[in-house]
Amino acid sequence: MPATPTVYADESNSTGENLLDPAQAIFCAAGVCVDADLARGIVDDAVAQMPASLGEPKYTTLSKTPNGQSVLLKALSSLTDQTIRAYLTHKQFMVTTKMVDMLVEQLAFETGYNMYADGAAPALANMLHHFGGVCGDKDAFDHLLHTFVRAARKRSKASADELFAAMAAYQATTDESFSGISGVLLITRAQADDIFATIASGKLLDNLDPAVPCLVELCHGLGAELGDFALVHDASKTIERQAPQLLTAHELPDPARPGQNLPRLPLTGITFSDSTSAPELQLADWVAGAVRQWATRNATGQDDPFADALEEIVQPWVLGGIWPDLETVTNPRRQE
Image (tube, rainbow, N blue to C red; front, side, top):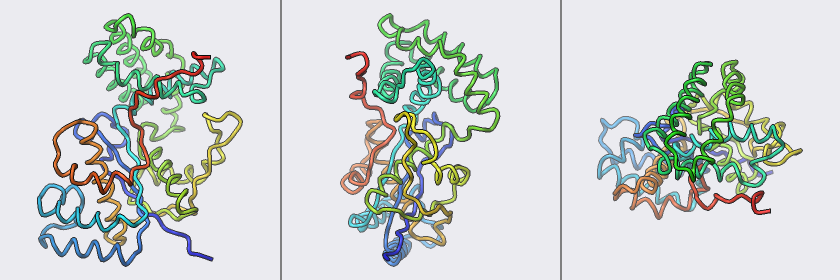
């Protein structure tokens, strides 16, 4: 029997449920399945080219200097024949997806309408993301997003009051053509109270953290190539908390497929380690950082020559992401 492959995973720009840190707008989860000897050789070669005083050669450190960038490009280029995959999150867009998911989708579900089945949920999230600050006051919309994040994290009834005050203040600034779309948020108070009560009870943890949904998609993508695999993740409180749920996800109902359960993750187990004992995790750190830097350049449009240099290497590794896409703004139910 062939040995079960092992994937090593790490993250870049993890801020937990704080999705609106302007300095860390993009999150990336990356997984590598690399020969152990090759991984050790790549890491040792990189360390040998850096000053002895550097310490652990993390991506954030190496990427700040020309010599470090050269080391990273050489190391990452040597991985092009290996199994490397990454999954991204545009954090501000995730805020609108969570508002739709936690509030509007639940309201719709209670009326018998599944917003996942026809793509209405991502369509609404994209409309709010792309047009919220254009068809209404931008500052009021930004305040709404920040208030939603605080409400979902503060776990108190008062936060719901604050959230709906922010919704009303924003709604008062919206164009007539957009007010019907954004106004749906204001009729979700009962759903907000229910979800915040669930969060306060401790039954729903890490709800805004992109680490889990990104890891789920990353595992499905890698599983399609490798079959079942063992996962070794860099130390992560979120993933450690959620590991039992990840391994039994197939026992839960799939909201997008009524009557069916979520697909099984192709995992034989989840363990945790660090790059001092597993050079593969050092490579996962570099991959996650490089993909995140390239994606940040794409999202912000800012000039970044190093991201330009990374593009040809890292773009083939990207499976997808929680990412804004106006092409999703269709509604098959309305078209029928």
